Image (cartoon, rainbow, N blue to C red):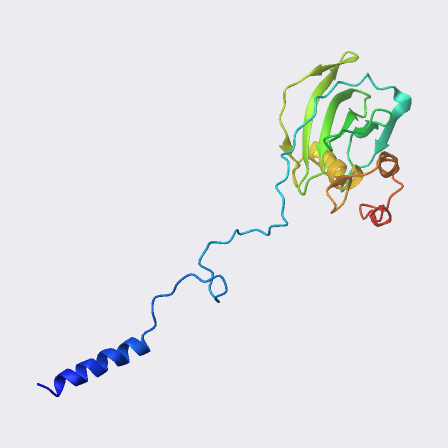
Length: 195
């Protein structure tokens, strides 16, 4: 029995040497025991976007209307924007009066806004009726990649004419006017990308 006791004592000493003590959090150690934030400390919380209050514009004069062409197939309608009252709000929304005219001369007017986001969004604030605008309570809608001429109109305005492509920001007003007048390459807009 005496031979077993020294062997057990030696084994206990050997095990205590080979098995390390439980890890203790050490500030200088190689392991991180606290959960780190998933984002960099340099990333700051942004402010949520807030739409400004909107006043309706005056009825457009024919002399202020700028005709623009849609991307793709020719349309049976004429599309015009009131260049005089085309504006970018403090909320970044481009607001404009849109006139859609048929071949018979009948016109539909709407006061709208476009947000220059990755996919584009538009909102109708009012429809023109008998020489004045009647406000509607419509929400923001995504610009469709498919659809009729009306969808192509919003796609052309938000992606090429009123917003800087791939920058998701409104163009300066003078560049919007130039783009609407067709003084920009066919939907490449390379010359305005550097502005």
